[in-house]
Image (tube, rainbow, N blue to C red; front, side, top):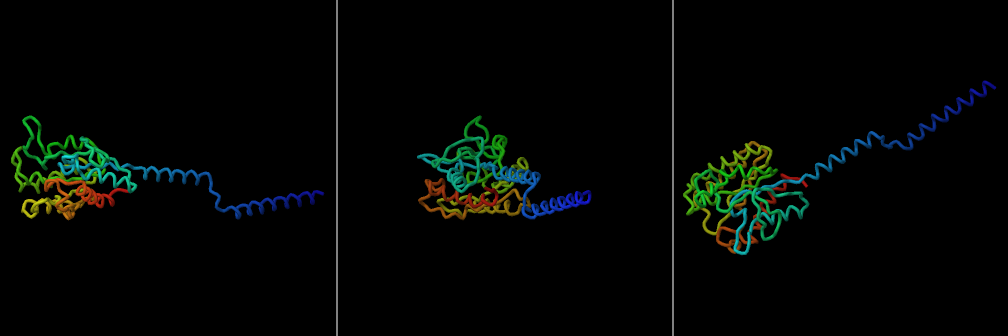
Length: 268
């Protein structure tokens, strides 16, 4: 009897081992609780990365702020709408706010009539300096992932608000970009050429400023400074309101140029 009892125990043991092996072969891919937890963590981290909202700051003069008798025409509204329509999570930031004719995020860091700076131009006694450089404390009080910089045309034009030497514009632009990059080292800066104007665009100071903008972006060894050639946009005569500022159609073309430059730098 004792031998029979031991034999039965041995059979049951072998049956249990075989059943366990069969279960393992039948369900080889069953995840452990640890692998499930790791997978969940990876998914949450991915969702967190994909949920980033890109802060974009348009900086410049009236071509960025917006102008027009019927309301502010600017690339800003078109650009914001293009980005949102194509699935980008963006928020425009800046110390000023003005909604364009096509809506969009109203925040920006631009001021009509501003030069590059530094210089002594002022719109009125006691109004402060009317240039970007001397107002960087206010402009850079807001953090941005990407700064869009279109500035310089007012340095080339005569003004009742004070003389600014056009030949100094290229060096001032270089210093401005350098200062912004030093104060905001984590921000990407896209430096634009001057837009076409409704009269000649072949005068030497204009060409020199465009060349410097390209040099700044392409010479930089940093992956934070870029150049966009908005001067090659084919703006037609009827897309200007006064041979300098743009109609809605002209502003939309400029927005498309910015959009192409932004896409490689931000992810959805």
